[in-house]
Length: 212
Ligand SMILES: [Zn+2]
Image 1: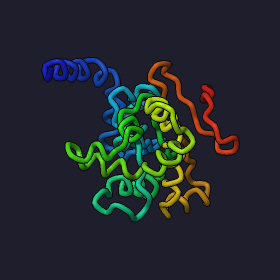
Image 2: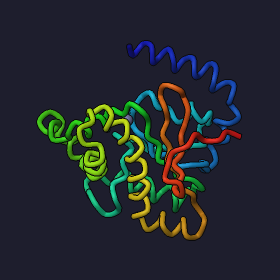
Image 3: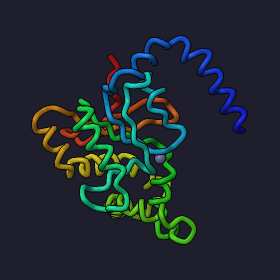
Image 4: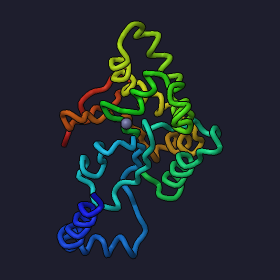
């Protein structure tokens, strides 16, 4: 299996790197100036650079299980999300922050089924998903009697909205928004169609993004 990855690296060096040599040389000597910060799920089927056709240097990406943004100041043992947000807004001055979930999210499926079931084998994962527990409870009340699969699918969307709200608990994000230095976006990528839906706060719904 590792051989396949090493062969892939060889192909990257011979083809992509050679073709884009100038870009890589520029990136190596200058500072990064990414167009957006993306907070996405770890899922291997969601590949931000691929689906946005973005080159190295364009996306500042942080990934975790179920694209969760713990609210500011909480979970001091899990500082990586907050540190990346502050770095992106303060130092990189990214003009966009995108929370990107996806359909068929295994993390949210586990949340729909009850993270308490995860405590024995995967206690860290169970604790991590606690940050989305309020979203599950909101959905579970509305969706009482529905199968876990249906709840998980609805959670994909509700979770993105909840994480956008959590993003606003970061003083640096709130300030940048007020000063019109940053825009925040909530996206859901559909694994089956390859399409992205974006959250429209006024209508409170997700709509297919318009591609220029
Ligand atoms: Zn996922």
